[in-house]
Length: 169
Image (cartoon, rainbow, N blue to C red):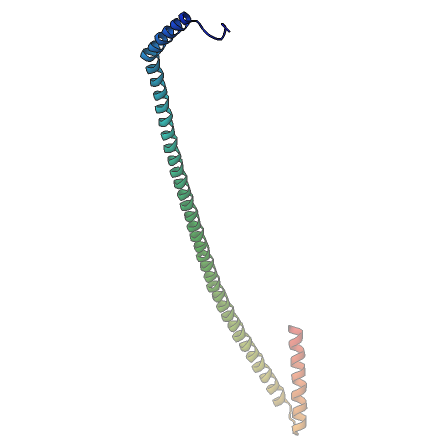
C-alpha cells in the first residue's frame, strides 16, 4: 500500500516544483504561446479575408468576361447583319444593271430587226417594181386579144420571174 500513497516530503517537493514550473510557464511560456496563437488566428483571419476578396474579384472578372462575350456576340450579329445588307445591296445593284443591259440589248435588237425589215421591204418593192416593168414590157410587145390570154401570159411571166429569182438566190 505504500506504493499507492506518496510520502509527505515527496508531496511537498512535487508541489513546490509544480508551482515553480507553473510560475515560469505563466511568466514566460503562456504569453509567448498566447501571442503565437493570436498571431496564427490573425493570419488565418487575414487569409480568409483575402480569399473572400479574391472570390469577389473572380466573380467580378467572370461577370466582366460574360458581358464582354455578350458584347462580342452582339457585335458579331451586327457585323453579320451589315454584311448581309451589303450583299443584298450588291446583288440588287447587279440585278438592276443586268436589267438595264438586257433592256438596252433588246432595244438594239428591235432596232436592228426593224432596219432589216425596212431593207427587206425596199428590196421586195424594188423586185416587184422590176417584175412589173418586165411583165408590162412583154405584155406591150404582144398583142393579146382576150382577157384569158392576157391572164395566161401574166401567170407564165410571173412563174418565169419567180423561177429566175429562185435561181439567183
